[in-house]
Length: 101
Image 1 (cartoon, helix red, strand yellow):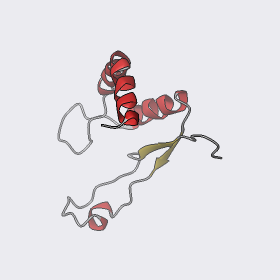
Image 2 (cartoon, helix red, strand yellow):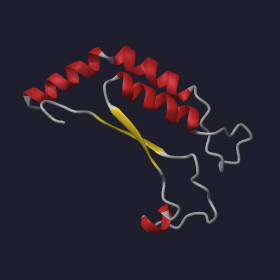
Image 3 (cartoon, rainbow, N blue to C red):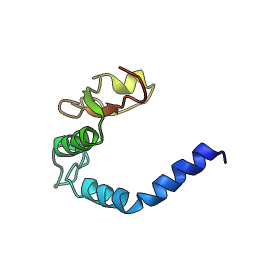
Image 4 (cartoon, helix red, strand yellow):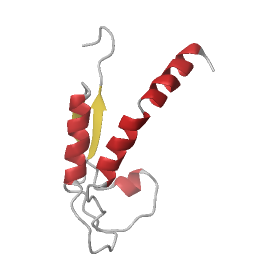
């Protein structure tokens, strides 16, 4: 393990309490897949908002990336037909490090 990896792991270990707390907060949000068959299925938007807000607080620029209607075909996966991906965007974030824009 090189020095950079060692420093990173030390920081992760030092943030363990915060990471566990945030993970508990996230999994407590009802974001059950609407096609799961679970009666408690809810919209995923509350989880998307939570993660976008966390990214913003951490200094990132979050954005939503819509899932393409043909995502299974693009991935070469046989998947269920007729699924709607409306409101089920992926949330991604970008951080600027150093002298970036």
